[in-house]
Structures are given as structure tokens and as C-alpha cells.
Length: 353
Picture 1 (cartoon, rainbow, N blue to C red):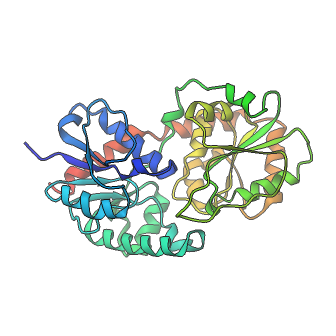
Picture 2: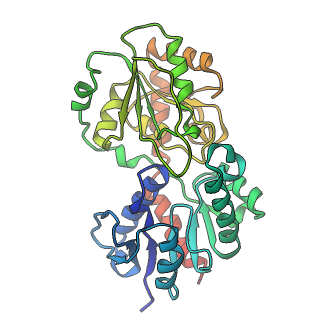
């Protein structure tokens, strides 16, 4: 019997952001495969959170879960196994490894990160490109990574994100009362408070809209160790909602005048798809990744132009476009965690057959 494929579970020690969302949803999709019990094993640090799974067994390795655990403890455990690393990092010397690198931001926009973090990940990405098989989440990132890592684009597989996790969950409408949003018009921005998410431009756009009852709800946490926080102007109409559960996010999106997604750089961008699943209009920054994901299902603006964003917000306050909402639903349907998991699952066989 073949040795099981090990899954790098370091992500279960990290705060939830887009890459950790990707990892948890891909593992859940792999867990639904009929042979998952024998085919995969999730390896996690001893202090990691649990990920409820039906078939894939979980093994705990001692260690706190940082780079040292990954490069030493996991590398040792995986010596005779294929390894799947879903969050842009993995043991640098492991050759039978599939690594999903989500974007080339540490190369293209190092100014958005703490210098030591950006340097370390540039070095690691280059080493992984020489030893491992790579995948990413969009055609845009495929091209970006190929350019900075000196690879051909077809050497990097594409297994996109999805928003299926928000598709059928019941919304928790209590969040509207908790945040004093019941009966108010509001916009939502979903993203951790880091410079890349560019939430300050959304706050400046709000200043162009004088309605005292209008709210801008910022959903996300401040992350440390990766980048500094993203400052926002002092406006009492800004609601700092912090981290919220999926049912709460679903309720916020369903009731919003629109989602504002003002990122400066993305490899994909899950929140626009989450909004489309919930029938929420989307205003997105006019960058390559969001154009690829959203196509004609969103309104776009230059992410440095708060006046242009305010103009798009006024458009949505006058009422959503039903045709664009329907286009958004169809756009979200084009992405599936199960289909992306199947791409990675097949690649783990074909790369080392």
C-alpha cells in the first residue's frame, strides 16, 4: 500500500486570512474523497487548532508551529512521503512536495510587508521553485510567479479559490443589531487591516458621502508579524467589526448596499465572490486579479482614487443593477473548492507517477 500523502497543517496555528481559508477548505474538500482515509494524513503542530474531518486522520507533531516546525519536524516526518503545502511555505529541501503560492506580492510589492518577512519569503519561494512542484490560485498569479521565479507559466498549476463556504449557511442576523446596523444603509469591506487591503481609501471615500446615517463596516483583524496596520481616518460612521463568523459575514453581505474591495495587490481575492454568493453588489479595485475573478460582475475604481470610489458607492445607493447581480451569481458558480481540490489531488499523482 502506498504511503499516505501528508498535508502541511501549520496553517491551523495561524490567524484566519485568505490563504488559511484556502487551506482549510481544500482539506475539507479532499476529505470528501472516497479514499481520503487511506490517501491523506493531516500533520499539525501539537498546539494547533483542530479541523473537523470525517475521513482524513490527523497526526500531531511536537513544536509550536512556526517555520522551525515546518523546516525540521515536518520535513523529517515527510521524508518518505509526498507532501501538500497549501499556504505558500513548506520544507525547503523536500522534493516530492506540491506547494500553493498564492501571489508574488513579496516580489512585486515588498513595500506592503515588513522587510524581514518579505526577504525571508522571497528566499523561500526561490528555493521551493527549484525543488517543489508549484500551484497558485489565478492565471494572473501564475504569470507573476513564473516571471519572478524564472519558470514557464505551464510549470505552475492553477487551483482557484471559491466562495462555496458561504453559499448555503443560514445568516446570523443578530449581528445587525449588535453593530447598530438595523434599518441603516451601509457598505462592508472584508479584509484584515494590513496596507495591502487599502481600507483607508474606503474610509476616505466615506468622507465624500455626507449622510450621517450611512455606515462603513470593516470586517477583519489587525495582523502582526507580516505588515503594519492600515490606518483609517477618524470617522464615527466607521464600524470596526473585527473578526466575524461566516454566518455573521453572510448576514452583513446580504444587508449591505455593497461590498468595497479596494486592495492594492491580490493574487485572487475571495470577498468579491463571497459577496456575489450572497447577492451583494461589488465595487472592486481595478487590478488584474480582480478583473480576472469578477469580470463584468463588479464596478471598478482606481484603488488610489477615493473620489472615484465614492462615486461608485453613490451608484449603489441608488439601487443595485439586477443584471449585474445575476452575472455575479453565475461568476461565483464558476469557482468550486471541490474542483480545485481535484486539480491538486490529480497533480500529486501525475507529478511523481
